[in-house]
Image (cartoon, rainbow, N blue to C red; front, top):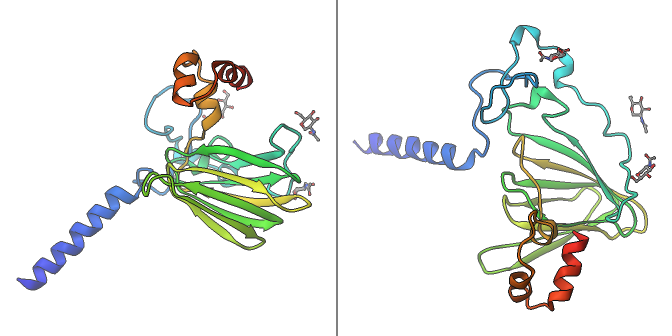
Length: 217
Ligand SMILES: *[C@@H]1O[C@H](CO)[C@@H](O)[C@H](O)[C@H]1NC(C)=O
Ligand SMILES: *[C@@H]1O[C@H](CO)[C@@H](O)[C@H](O)[C@H]1NC(C)=O
Ligand SMILES: *[C@@H]1O[C@H](CO)[C@@H](O)[C@H](O)[C@H]1NC(C)=O
């Protein structure tokens, strides 16, 4: 009886964690290499015929190449995702090389469907995220070469290069499509625009400043 209860608890916990901690659905086969030609709409991408799967469906080359950081942020992302590597379809994983020039940064953003681990390969990177509970607590850390940091799913976070030279990091998320929402673009760059009267009240800013921000994003 006691043993049965323990077994039941273990099974129940397994079920609970299985359901609540697996963000992308678990695969039901070895792989489901994406068929980009299919017009079928499902959660993810349809599988191509396993017989036509080739080794290059699982292969990516390019993490040895420094990203182009000539942009207003001074940063770049080179993703190895399902769009580039169809063999990643349904496997719940994306990796990216991140480059930051001196002074480079990534604006505040969040990934609606993925927890991230950032690992610094070269340079020095300030990273931080803000929680919903406790209310707006800010956790931040300066990462040096070899350091890694967890950014929990859905939380607003940012990065900036603190090194005099370039910083290189590897970002991993546990979703094949974690999504990226940049806060400034979502709020001030929404199309059609969110009412500037409303934003001026919500942000306690002069309406002119709100309209300037809306023109920018
Ligand atoms: C998709 O279509 C292109 C062009 O017709 C073809 O070369 C390619 O092999 C197709 N891919 C798959 C996965 O069927
Ligand atoms: C990256 O590696 C590829 C393949 O090994 C090579 O062809 C390319 O020249 C390398 N690029 C750089 C910038 O090192
Ligand atoms: C980097 O990006 C900038 C802006 O898009 C572009 O003008 C420049 O040619 C790019 N540099 C390289 C090496 O691709």
